[in-house]
Image (cartoon, rainbow, N blue to C red; front, side, top):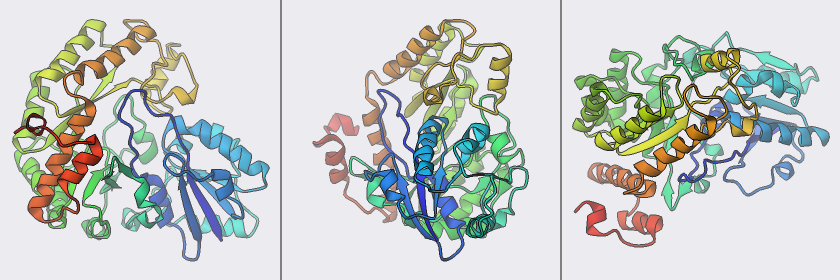
Length: 429
């Protein structure tokens, strides 16, 4: 059987540094395919090949969608493929969030996690009994089944930014015990924290040649003893990695640093001493911080947003990422805003977290949009985002050189990124 797996393109945020990480959903899906399947993968965001031409002669086209801003492209592509007589199966996070709409463009829709389940789907296809919906949302497979992702389907050379190899994505757990207001993870993966056995974590780490990772777990601060065990397992692999929040505990943070914690994405939601100290404690352990800042919450006014922007400059963040509150499907945010008749658009192409698609409580949509752009401009006014990112990369390179795992030359990376050598001032000398 021949399968074409497609990851649809989406519109990138205007004015921000654009780079492409190797997607995680497709390599997880590929690992769950039974033996004997011929698979080709096409990521429209980086691959110049024509998607329609790549699907010619396939028995099945699988479209994997992660982001809401991908869905309209995925649907349009599916419509064209089906008009040519090809069968299309949808899966992935955005397919689950937009299941009813996606179904209108699909021969089959897969909902849930794939381990141990794709063989039966392909058997149904081979025997002419493909079902319209395969719904496993409420029945997660045993976490022990989650093995190493099949990264061999990726064209490695496509995932470089200015000559620098991007991180590989890796996860040590599924599910999340938290239920954050704008987040759909509780709907997608359940409220139960499901850690992978450490033997399987080690198996996957050993299979990843890239020394830099993004640990994509929704939060590592799920269970303190598990975190410590995870970091002890990671230490021998000498990886350099970024992640979402780590537990605010000295022993945990020290182990994270030993294991290669490079930087964390830390939500900055107010101007409190708690946040100030949180950032400082990461830095005390040699872990950089990228502040993730959500704008447009009901308790935010124009003045409070301006104070928050000023505060970010005070607490010595290494990077900051600003997003606008976005009412994604299957979130409490969307439920509330819909009941209050404050959702202004259901054009999913605009659901990038960089456009205002709802009525804010204390200002006009246009004013919130202006403040979003002001936040980016103010934070990166004195030092551009590309330079701050380069400084983070230099920290990773320094660690890798000390461990003997570095596979490039620092000067080459600098020249590729900036077209010149850095000055002493830029290098912090």
